Length: 454
Image 1 (cartoon, one colour):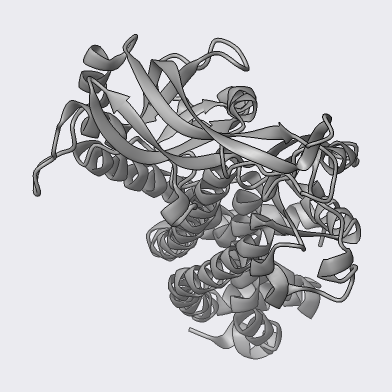
Image 2 (cartoon, rainbow, N blue to C red; image 1 turned 180 degrees about the vertical axis):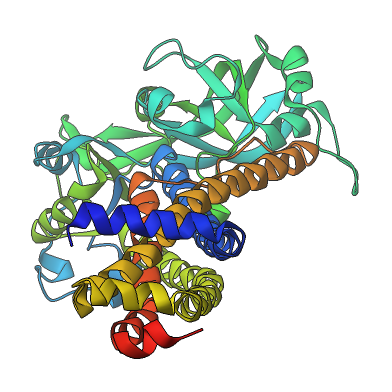
């Protein structure tokens, strides 16, 4: 028999017992829907976590520190020079790192604790310099109130929400929502505050020229304009070193604040840094850039190392979700076996006539395989649609809950094309496997006994 004839005969047989076959197909649909819904949830959560990390500017960043730092002595690897012989993390080293393939920029990490006066009241907090590129590369400033810095060295600051509340004397009560960020900007935007800091200046040697090893500390102050208030902390992973006031990086460098940048007494007048942040064009290039920096004699760390455990977690989660989702499909496969076995008992005379007319055992097996595959195809397609609807409902309900909790909406589910095609193919394969026994049993029927069957 030709493939077309077998397929046409299979669909005709399925239409004759439409109620029973429909129930079996619905069972397959429910199994595929549970599989698609669970896997789409796991995929969506993984993509949400990856998007947040990439948008935060941390996923494509390598943090570089000098091996001369005493805090890193216990963490040295053997693939570089010893700490005493390692190079200084200075301006020449920064420019050299910036020339590495895939590196977009390398900027020093400048942050310092200082006193800030606002309305003649002192406030002690942490200040950080951020590059001008953070305007487009850090999601902390996407929903901010006000504006970003007008230039790379403008005397302006952006406040973190908690510090803005402190300046206004607002103390959120327990059990109540935080102050609306829009309310904080009204009395603060355009106002000025003053920072007081210690500046390091080189002192002249007794013979006249400036001596890099001799320096003095001078008390300075700088008036800055408040241009924005942000709700999200760009440095959420800093812990105790988390800043609440942000100024342009170029301005922070020009202030020469102690001890954010310091000079090596035995070296030239060029500043050396405690750490650098190296931004890479593509997260896939981070490991290569990290290895190149380590070969230069510096310590390097990136979130790619930390996210390996995250990817492993999601891989395990997706595996468990797939197993639980497949249980319903396994139950549906039992329904396929039952349906086809019942079809054999009802169609024994038909099978006997087919064999008497010259149909081979392979033709009979192909007919039952076609019926099982048809139920798998229809059930899989309907199940993918049902799983997509379930995912949309879950995402809709989750966003309603997030909105009531004053959180931004999120896309927690995703149904990629490979999942759609894979679910349908898996449904067909399971259906064909379920049809093995009924097809083999039908092919073994003796045509003489089948024609005598009543």
